[in-house]
Image (cartoon, rainbow, N blue to C red; front, side, top):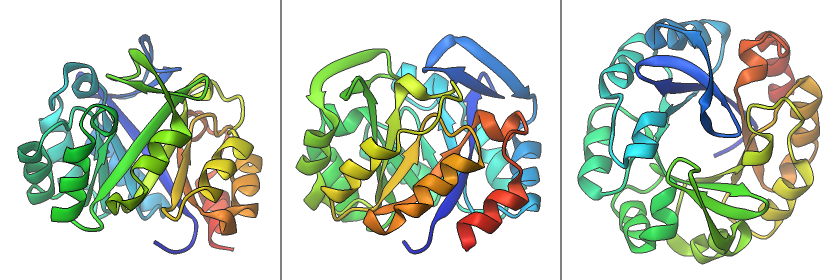
Length: 244
């Protein structure tokens, strides 16, 4: 990975594009009925990647929006990194063979680290570890459960697995437009060799600027959600800043 990459997010709930507040499925705002149309729009705006999350799958522990994902893959030329409900090798293989560029393993990183290592070994450069933290502690099962494991400890345990990147999400800020947790993300990145992608709370171009300023410490990009959908971040302006 090189440069600073912006990942527009498409979160899927019952086939529609939504944004949650702090991962609460009851606090979902519907932004688009057609995820394929949204994916094509992001590509037209100049984004080079897509970050897609199967929210229903994350709670169910298995894929639940396969049709919507397939339509996204058909509608956009951009590579897709996909998370949500990916808990075993057959699911990893099915998504990667089906056109997904990278899979994101979240709950599995806590509950089955050996599986994560195996996936990284079998598919080098195509597995990302998602570490979602509430109060600094790792959350799993679509953020419905909070463990007693500190996010930094989990990241260090998996440092030698060979993941393409670690996505670090501050759940307390996710979907709240409260500003990204730059310092905590930077602290994690400094402890690792694996690149870190920031997620949760990105509210304005200032957050992108703050992350970009410490990119050399190991922050490879950030995920854009609600602020992008609400128009608080202008794609052309954000992309120009990321590329500078």
